[in-house]
Length: 441
Ligand code: NAD
Ligand code: G6P
Ligand code: MN
Image 1 (cartoon, rainbow, N blue to C red):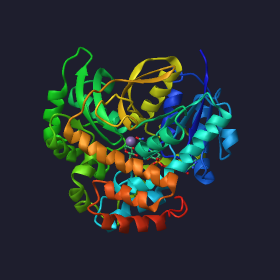
Image 2: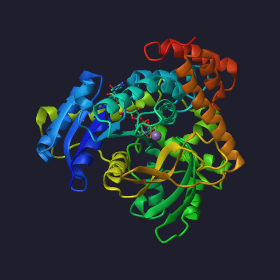
Image 3: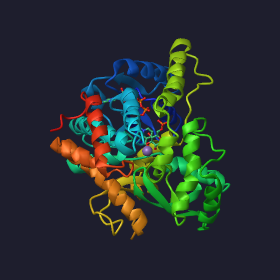
């Protein structure tokens, strides 16, 4: 069996240890000869790199492991790049959340003005990763989690249309795990689903078990009362803001009970509610820094110091499983059905041909084959048209260095009440992002 070489770009991420652990766990089905981490923050990379080195040394010393901040060393001799960079790190995520909130607008990592701002930061560095990959390992695949995945996908599709990059999201997977609990199934893999939309902006239209039994009625009845709050344990379970998001899904569902919505639609359909329940001095970034980031880095430091890998505190879940499943599907032609962010090209008949949409695809050795969706209804289509326009305008703004386009993008977001408010937010965002955005004129 061929053995693979894997690079994790954004190696200092809070999600790196869980992906590493899963790769080690699955190496019977997915043999690995080499693992490398790459990050542009040496200090952050060193802590996660040293800790993961302890794990590899203990569990699979035959795997060659290294971490680096040098692109050539990182990208040479690689089969898969798993990318999850956060351009501007948590410091900038905090600003994305707090600046819009100051003006009474949703402050969120990937939705509303904060998400659009993050898009402007991410485009250049993700393109840079693609270029490194094409230079040093042109046959590799990049599996990208780096957010905002919707805008990153629009940009990579426009600027590097032939690149071997697949953009993905773990939110539908996480919600499906909760649906499986609702239906009394052992795993989300016992369900066959149909889904359509943009990234962080979509709906399930059909969910069946392997015998073809329709599971939508049971799930709908549950979501109507409880949203997606279940006993499912995952990375979001203990955090107050996410419990509220899973709960609010019941009100999102009520708007169109024909479908089951992604949690992220809350920010577009109930922005007033979101703002009212936000605290300008304590947003999701603060919660993550005191939660996941603290847990992961404390555990990393403990591992480095004690070298004690028993009872290792890193948690492995859907997030890691999904990206490893995708790599396996490409490596071994498994023909697995997976939700990916891909060019529409007619899959949704009545939606822009070149938009990047999130739909089920069959994945194998030669890449992915999208499944046909057909026509979508006026309500969902209308919402998607507005959102994709905002996302496309961000890419325009980045390419053309255009203040006007970025102002239009923020104005276009359903979360923003007027062009005047959009301008105030934009001017603050420009100041906050001087180190990351092209200079707009
Ligand atoms: P994090 O800040 O802990 O990790 C990101 C790492 O990327 C940092 O170590 C940082 O130094 C590094 N980095 C930033 N710019 C870089 C560059 N140009 N080159 C190399 N490295 C760079 O963040 P996190 O919370 O672990 O999340 C990581 C990313 O994964 C974020 O973009 C997040 O939104 C994304 N994410 C996406 C999904 C999804 O569904 N698509 C799910 C979870 C997380
Ligand atoms: C989900 C989404 C990701 C997003 C993450 C935020 O997993 O799919 O795209 O980055 O939530 O989670 P956090 O815990 O960082 O707020
Ligand atoms: Mn996502």
